[in-house]
Structures are given as C-alpha cells and as structure tokens.
Image (cartoon, rainbow, N blue to C red; front, side, top):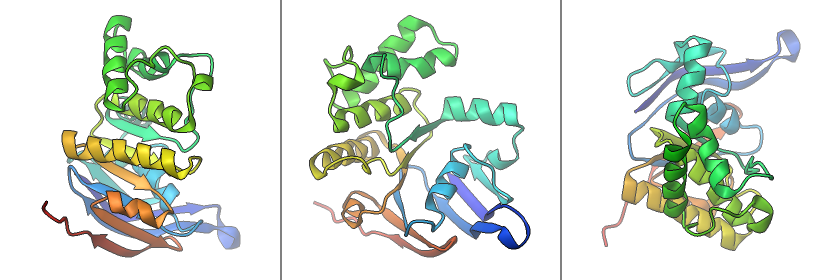
Length: 230
C-alpha cells in the first residue's frame, strides 16, 4: 500500500544543514497497524508529515496504492490530502466554538458534500469512536480523551486509505490513552483501517502489528510482531 524508497529530508544548506531523514526505505501493507518509534529528533514526525503530504521530501519517492504521490503537482497533492488521507494531531486541533459534529463534518463540506450528507457521515464517525450522543458538545465540555476521539472521528469520516497519527496520546493520561488506543485497535481490526502512528511509549506497541524504529534519521529496526490466535 505504501512504498517508500530512499526518502531523504534535509533542512537548510551548507555546514548548518540538518539531515532529518537519511535515505529510508520500507513498505507498509494494507490493514497494518504500525508504530513509528525513536528518540526525539530521530526523524519519525518528519517522516509522518511527508507521508501525509504535509511536508515535502528533499529526495526519494513514495507511492500510495500505486500512485506516486511524491511527484504530484501541489494542487493535486492538496486534493489527495483532503480526500484520501486522515491525519490526527497530538493537540487535537479542534475549533473551540464548534460542536463535535461540526468539527467532524467541516472537512466533508470542504470536499463539496452537502451539509446533510456531511452531518450524517459525522454522526456515523462519532459513533464509531464511542461518542454517540455527544455530537452537540463543544470541546470545553469534553475530556482530553473525548477530544482526541473527536479528532479521530474527523480523520475517519472521509474514509481515508490511511490514518496517520502523530503522538495522539501525548497530552493524555494513561486511562484516556488506553481509550484512544482501543479505538485505533477496533478501527484496525473491525474495519481493516491502515494506521501509521508515531509514539514514544513502549506500552503502546501492545496494540500494533509492527514497530519501525528510527535513530538519527535512519531506520534502525523493523519488527513485525507475531499475532497470537485466541
């Protein structure tokens, strides 16, 4: 589903240049739940932003479902990002004056869908993440875990090919983190959602199929976990 070949990202030039990614290559299959790990500054968030088309690579290429997205013109990249990719920020990025449903259906309306269709899709997404009945609450009326679940609902409402999550539990306590990760696990197992999640917490790996670890801009290890049949 995702094929990354010799991906590089360099910030700056000359002696002050920072090589955030030093030519990494890997593949992610459809339906995998992958954790991207590594110390601060290892390149994991840089990688995620490039894959989600929020940033550009300096060199290398990557494809999603056979489409070389790294070579798309900017207008096409923006449309692809809007319609095909889900991205979850660690700080929720919700609009405080809007209800949970409004925060979710805003992107659908930006795609050109009607308000009626967007609202219906938003309610379905909120129900998937366990927020049925809380669609009319504004962010200040929700817990940290609930805010993050609204952010997840917003990302999955458009039924993206891939869900990217940048340290989605960074601002949450253990209880709320488990609730959010349980949502990810259900989305992955029940709906076959492909998820790529940046995290620094070792216990989060209990939820994933595979752990890709970065160090100093390079791929250090790629471990696929064995699933135990119950």
